[in-house]
Length: 235
Image (spheres, rainbow, N blue to C red):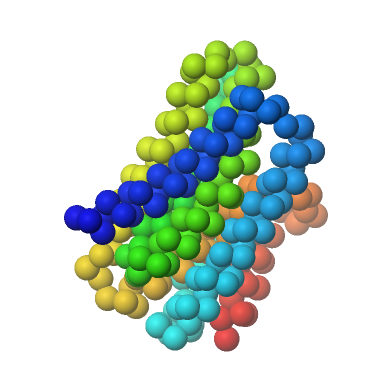
């Protein structure tokens, strides 16, 4: 049980980073330019954690082709999830607060990815879970800012904004607990494949959701190109 409590604590670190971003939005009112720079920094942190801490440490623990397949499958899963969210968004009436709630949904989805990554990493080793959680803290700050800033712009009261920011602890903790218990009794190869699957999902989420760079190709095609080319580094 103590190991499980450690996993919950690591997941709460990610939620704390997100909540800290909300506090920044409440008191410091940073500019959009500052937010954009922070989002790019957050993307760099995520990609660095995946490239330096995750991939090199799993290459000798499972078949290379299976790891590559898991990475691509994770990216494909993100694209399917994104398509479902986009379809749901288009079905909603364009009310005054709709845009802010769309941002909330996107951030909550990203935090689910945080939790899965932390839980899967912790099932493999406590040190891996800690490194992943620390990387998430800095990456989640800009997301927390974006949500609170959007709700403030829509006229929502400060108390409700703080409660909404605090509610992000739910998806990240739930996802971390699910991943940890699902993988705890599995073999090392299964844990590694699951971790790389989530890494593929999270890599694409970082690039697609945080950078939002204009692309000539459709986002689905560009996303598949990204994860497909990334697997070349598994060899």
